[in-house]
Length: 167
Image (tube, rainbow, N blue to C red; front, side, top):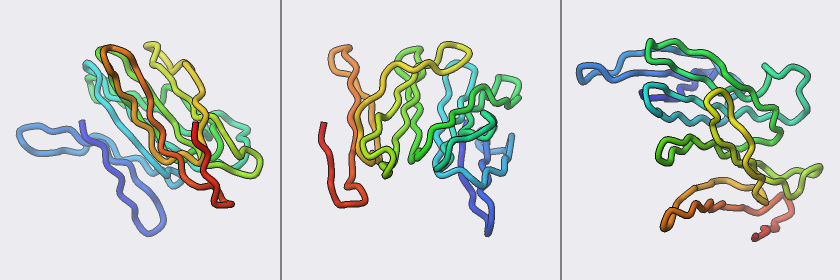
């Protein structure tokens, strides 16, 4: 499975392609004009596609949130979960052994100057919150393991006033 973003003049399209006989063929193309980031990961016979929308206000309808799609072995694509996270900057899917994790980074804002970036684990049907990691205008997150102990590194950047918080 391969995911890519294509921006036309007014819309962002997410293409999901599969490699067959040394050629990529398109499985799905979805217009996602609100998407600012995307990640995809295969685990077993399924693919997971996570999109980050730049929401600045609380949403009324859950389906207006950042979607998580599941791609099945028979190439069906369906939304399995939506996140109404405001000020979302990026989204990361990571696998460790047979587990799938999702991490979100957030922009700092006047109403949330020091947000906590959420860290989730796939339960088989949805992502369950494991922890919220202190972050300040986080731009990148990277999980890693040392001697079977799991860690998460966050790259924080200066806020609107030029300050960077370290945790």
